[in-house]
Length: 255
Ligand code: NDP
Ligand code: 8X3
Image (cartoon, rainbow, N blue to C red; front, side, top):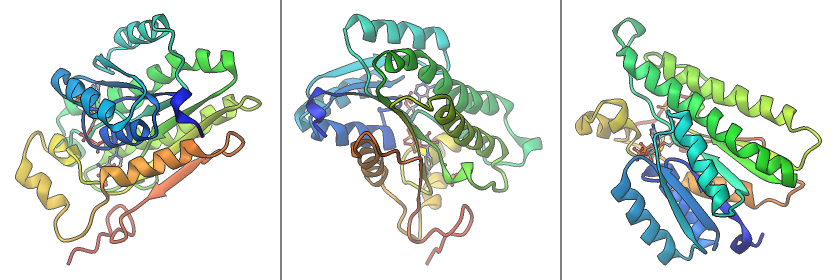
């Protein structure tokens, strides 16, 4: 695939999987639209992506929980005469790891409004452009938590089960079009994810990845890039990617 004529939008590209994914597409020469709430990180990423070989880089700072902001950004993108070929719905988080009766319920809103509603509104805003040209690719970052549930993870697992349902259902809606829908579903990836889940407790976050080799953000970026690089008649519907030391959501071989 000739990426130099393609535009890839990655939500949540200020850290982790999103940053690595944007970098992978930049190395292939694509035009990147990157988003997140942290302005300084977006600016730094823009420099990194340009140096890595991106054709052009556009940054949009907004909170994906705010649907009015999504609409404004998509209007701007159109005004820049950009047409998004690949949307990577990556922005997401967990805000709890406790039994439901102890959960901080603001965390529930954060997860539902980001992981489900943010992904939905982003997709809804960009799909008409893809329908018009009968071409495009929506790549959702799901999780093993969309395939299984685990203790202390009710709401996060529910959001990732929702991503799985939305991915499969959207593929039905897009039947008879050339628009592809993919879900990349990682197991444990060492990023800022656990630090966010534990409200900034770095020490606790580090213990999650101790004693085994977790995935890196670059491993998932490669899976996203590979799926997007398949010829247009090939849809990678779903890909579960695990560290070799992980056999299920809760079975991790820690030495
Ligand atoms: P990180 O915390 O490293 O990155 C999360 C990204 O999402 C950041 O760029 C952050 O940007 C963005 N984001 C979060 N909330 C918002 C918001 N309200 N508005 C805009 N952007 C937002 O985590 P990961 O890279 O690990 O997570 C990326 C995706 O991968 C998530 O969907 C996560 O659920 C999924 N995942 C992660 C796994 C893991 O083990 N790490 C495993 C399976 C799936 P900013 O803070 O600048 O707004
Ligand atoms: C993030 C990985 O194991 O915390 O989706 O659910 S896990």
